[in-house]
Amino acid sequence: MSPEKYLLDWQTSQTNAESISPLLGQLYRQKGVETLLFGRQIVNASIIDIIKAHRVARRYTGFELSPAQTLPLVQALTRLELSPCKVDVGQLAHKFWKDHDDEDDLNDFLQTALTESLNSTQSVEPRDVVLYGFGRIGRLLARLLIDKSGPGYPLRLRAIVVRGGKQGDLEKRASLLRRDSVHGQFNGSITIDEERKAIIVNGNYIQMIYANSPAEVDYSVYDIVNALVVDNTGIWRDTDGLSQHLNCTGASKVLLTAPGKGDIKNVVFGVNESEIQDDDSIISAASCTTNAITPILKAVNDKYGIESGHIETVHSFTNDQNLIDNFHKGERRGRSAALNMVLTSTGAAKAVAKALPELTGKLTGNAIRVPTPNVSMAIANLNLGSEVTAEALNEYLRQMALNSPLSGQIDFTQSTEIVSTDIVGSRHAGVVDGAATIAQDKRCVLYIWYDNEFGYSCQVVHCMEQMMGVHYKTYPEAK
Image (cartoon, rainbow, N blue to C red; front, top):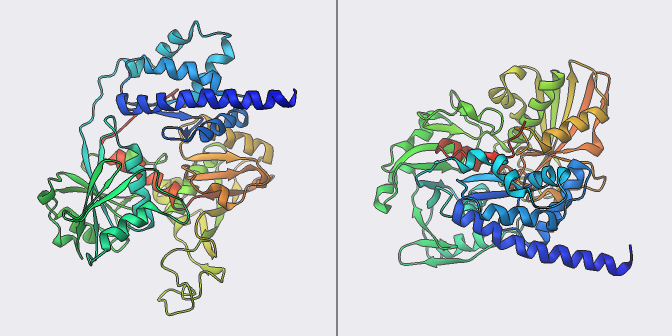
């Protein structure tokens, strides 16, 4: 191919991606249809990100997919009367062009592939959400909920509860949402209403409520009813403590973004979200590590059987550690997080059993906190019930990432150049590093990357949707 042809092809891809972008927004804002491309969300994505997402096709299918091939499919989707759902245009385009040479049969193909959505009368009433706490996870949840906001999405972020309320606090909170040293600038507009103590984010009015405990809050004052309160503080992790939120007028359910204690259900979305019942008022979304490893462990156990194993977590430092040496009630955590690798404990291995009971008593775990601000890795050293090779295991996990009920949680890469910063912003719970996989006889070692902030927050949002009755089917349906 001539040098000029490379540039021409790139410009053609840009032009087609520029045509695709507003159509994706139209589908989402007007119909509530969220578009994906091989599992990657492309609503609100930049033109370059849309082009890059197309390149993922080669990893999964072995074939190139260009914006020129997805554009007619997206255009056709805008002409269909779809109910709210998720549509993977990458997978649909691959299926269509594999068997067709032109667009003549595209409409019939989509009518067949999306029959259930076309005939659905599903509608969900708006549901109020409150974030109790506005730290690392709270702010990312706010970004995700605002990004999803629209006529077709029922969860409405109505309020944020924080301590404080001193002069300038509102501006500081808005600034922290606007700028993030790890996740970058917020994609949109943020203004403040000082008089009413509120922030307006991309047109969404969010009340800031200042309180030192749940007992001080009455949500009905702000016309908030039957709200889901998402507790990001980690202060209370048992039923007695979290029930304080349920005593607030206007609140009806609580989701904890930390492992729950006692009889609280610990949910890893994609694995055991079916355990959430309509009458459940308190649920835990478990931990970031538990969410990262459990879907992959389930996939491995389903095919090969896990007899025993050890999970070693190499985890970025967190806010509860000290920047410099100082007193800390936890062992070793008082030492400088920015200067040391810190050996500590993790309950993630045992917590897996709460979501995946068949692994009860089979796993041990430990953790090493390292001087990076985000992205972690779990190393799973597993003894299996049957023999396996690295090639067979990788191919199986690659297929699980592409087309399975766990495809929203598991991602897969075989790049030999991947490092931790490349995983920042990953929406998957865990990313299998296939280039590092080791397997021999009935043993294997898996290396699993995860964005312990953003990837986990995506899992929390899935749990929020499940608790509030928001169930959108994804097409094509995973096998």
